Amino acid sequence: MKIPKYTIRDIDSQYTPTSVPWNVDLVKAPSFWTKNKGGGTVVAVIDTGLDVNHSEFTGRIFKPYSFLSRNDNVVDTEGHGTHVAGIIAGKTCGVAPEARIMPLKVFGDNNVGLHIQDALIRILDHNRVAADKDKVRAVNCSFSGGFYDYMTAYLIRRLVNDGVSVVVSAGNAGDGNAETEEIFSYPAYIWECVTVGATNRDGKVAGYSNSFDGIDIGAPGTDVYSAWPGGGYKILSGTSMSAPHVTGALALINAVWYDREGKWPTEDEAFEVLMKHVRKVSDLDRRFVGEGILNLSWDNRRWPLWRVQLGAFYYKEGMETLTKTAKQTGLDTYPVKY
Image (spheres, rainbow, N blue to C red):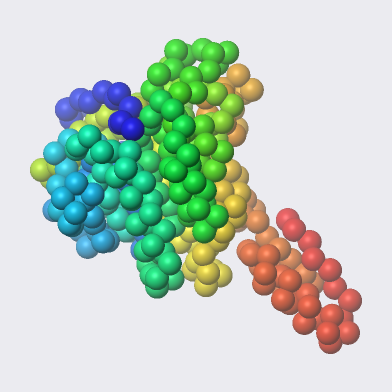
């Protein structure tokens, strides 16, 4: 596994944000913040580590671990992991600025593949014993490899079955042609993953972004402003930058769901809501950005709603319980999903 090739630029006056970065505004995250900003939802970032002293993450770093040093020293000498985490949950540059980050450092030696597997196992083990509010709800994987690995695929499937969304970058080997498919970007083509393609600042598909029929959604990937080791900021381009926008979106979705229902959504439920928060695209673009481009404009009607005559629920079990109770008391009722 490796970090897909990306470009990096220093900050200049043209790109320094005065309020929220353009990419966070483009996906309409501020609209969602009127309801929730991530509310402590835990998101794991499997990457190059994290600048744990950066002001963007103060008080929101949760159980960091390095699989290189086998301790909590996740110092990020490359910058990629810090930039990705900033897009997810940076205080001033993130989609979900109140989410918590679990940084898992796997890059830095020749055992990256095994480290990634160990990181996935660590998340599974953590969720098995963690308090409900401390369970990891989404995992960001802004990396790729050329060939299928059955153990990594199995662990991803385990996580998804346990309710955890696994978000991956589509890859940066695209040629700008929707008719050609760049599928050698594992685990992007694993069905259980949420695979993310890249768009430019103008909202159009980025030419470097891989295209194939397994991509689920698109998000900004070009000239994305975020945190950098040493307390600074840089501008990077690549699908590595697109994936964390969606991971941040899932942190927001999970937080709102938990606040309303007192329980986490299943992975299917979270994915269903995510897929309703998109800007639709032409059929030509679907191989680049799947169902559309991330759009977090708040709209209650986009959320699944289970209703019986006596009440409404955002999860199926509540509707079924009330229906059963009503029928036991002699009321003739039936469920409807909106």
